[in-house]
Length: 280
Image 1 (cartoon, rainbow, N blue to C red):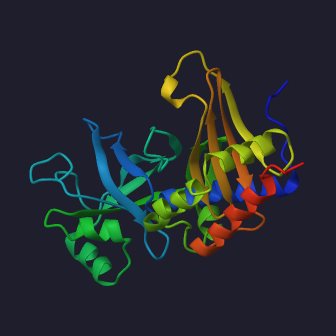
Image 2 (image 1 turned 90 degrees about the horizontal axis):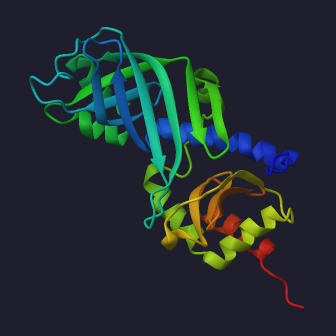
């Protein structure tokens, strides 16, 4: 029998929205990207690169290979089979928590210099990609794919890339620039309030879901009996509790999606208020 209870309809809808939101945020430039041209002989790996979406919804990557580097020698305007991996860690400074990852197979085409320059001049490129392309050795690539695979605390979710783009037409929230502020807003509730939220989901006193629960036989004592913010976005708050014998991940949905820091602060305060212990 599963230790994870079924979620209600509202929570299920929020989880679907959350899954799409996470995948979209990662494709928009959040997290750390790496790329493998797996059919090249020998294979070519790029461990650090900027990535994001153009204003028209195309996946773009950029790097700065030095002359003579194997990446610099890759041909222009030729379709190259690649795997793109984008891994996102929690903003939590005390421990390293991988919150989610996006994986996809597709074809990469490195753009000629004049095309890169035109896209840069037209403001089509996301900021980090633009800054990389503007470097003297900057290279811009466009990736085409049909499917995206998301790994997060709820498991593995395949998504059609076209459908994801159609359902994610607005700006991601939080943006890359706002992620630390959003994390700080959640942690500002205090550990007691976060424990109250997790306990209320565990006891089914509020809507939410136990995303995962794992028995552990070894771990770091300094992380025991602690609660961490794994992620927070427009749909809700994801928490992880670490105890000596098990770790659990919880999702607490907001009453409605939020699209600004002010709305996020209000939604977090409402969660804390609903789960605060009552006197008497």
